[in-house]
Length: 276
Image (cartoon, rainbow, N blue to C red):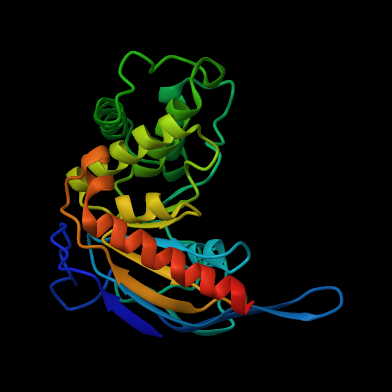
């Protein structure tokens, strides 16, 4: 696995914890499974350390194992080989210390926005007063004020994803996993959600792993972009983006660091497609 640094990153990356451990660590991870008629290797020799407070985006061809990687970190899937750790502890089952946001908001239609957010508290048996205070804080942070009592069918796609994001952050997880969370949104709403996510990440200091098919989204949001190969997925290259933590959308897209990073990633993915 090769690594490149396009320029110095001055984002709010806190590095390892006081004891030197990374927030997320994968060491020579592989995932293999058997289908009806053949053995399939989804991931092979994947190694990655994500420091606390870092935002890492993962891009690659469809079917390369990006979502599988997130499931490994969440403890929803067991690796066939290698080691997966969260804050130094081996992941051997579902983890309570992560938040997960999927492509679709998956809100309960009979619950209001606030009650969808508080579903997390009910499942985790959080103290009611604390959960409500945290929900109110997140509602303000994500611009959902005034829509707390709206039902999902009364909310736009972007607002529904904001509710899903609040729900994932309610218990203040140190690690947030996001699997194509804005893929179903229109272009303008997606831009707005990208700006919102950048602001929330800066304010909370949460470690984020984002899977996306959008190269520009990956570069706009992340400190580093992990580029994966076609299946069996492995890490082709890890790119330091080199953008400041606070990112105005239009200004960021015009910066040379942004153009350089997106061009390089496109070249890597184009080469991978040609080899496949």
